[in-house]
Length: 124
Length: 335
Image (cartoon, rainbow over all chains, first blue to last red; front, side):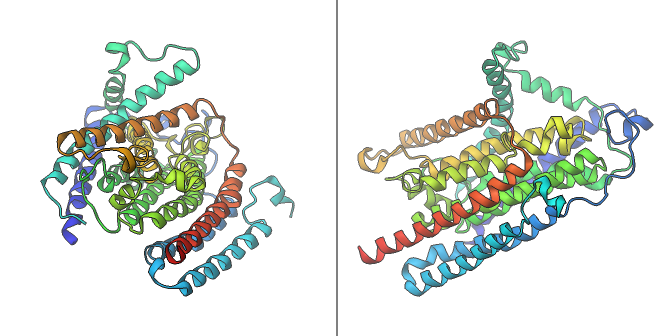
């Protein structure tokens, strides 16, 4: 059972070592001649204006929140999918109800305009 | 579930080697095919037909200066490129390349695949955030929102495949397609899966993350040297992995179409050769489609991407899953 995961652990170690090795190689082989302009963030050749970590559009947060809800739905589906054929009609019906409820949630989100990325959202 | 044997470790070595090399070759073929589509010649100077071009690129990248912007978050900036390479390589662990030819067969294979592929978003987002550049930040944020949105239809499409295999082991998913490929039983799911894979790999028409006209280089604007090379490598590894997943879940994995009906029993070496060449042929074809689409279809606008993901693909994939679930339930219990 658990020993089937051993190759995955070995693969993880190889992948990590490979990735870190590639990065160290370029550090060792490449030149290192920093200057002020080279180290400043790129802004089309101008001096950068202000910091980059300002506030950004709320839509990104909304998508992330909606994602969590629906991702949980997907994760719920997996064990159900493997079992439901032998578990009787009640399992099927309850899953349909569960999905319909979340579907209503999705319709609500869309109707509320939470997922509208058009310019219209700024006219509210 | 079969126990791990020495075959596993041989497959592991070969798969790693092939994956890294196929990523390099994909870079070459991308440029070459792009050139032919645009009526150019493309790279043809380094080695025969320019085949050593990726090698030359790697050497060039290794010899470049590694710049970290002073105002950035140094540690995260350094860690970020490791993540996409790591996740791309890890995916290879559960994909069967032929009958009995897999690194490991775990009974949570599909969940493992989803978990690992969704980790890839961290690399892109952290890279964008830690660079402290406005272009990078916007690219990273877009990447996060886009990959997160398309993961849902992707997960639903995979769930509709599991309906047929009744198992979360990827090997069982592959074997359930011996008679009927999933694309014939579940065509809507296949379309959704292919589109979502394109979006997850950040490939055109969904490459908003690095839309040159708006965001310069997107999340890797502030990256140079091999750190940039690793993002590049990871992108092409994701193309190869995406092709493998499309093959595995919807195009019969290592089975020929309807093989169970007409293909006589083959054993030994010939079976291995047949399986691997069928799998490779399909994977190469889909990698070609990835490149072909990139140089044919223009990029979406960001609001269009989000609209497609949430208003069309997600409801469609949920409906597709439920209809299939009810039909299969009726088929098993009443027929």
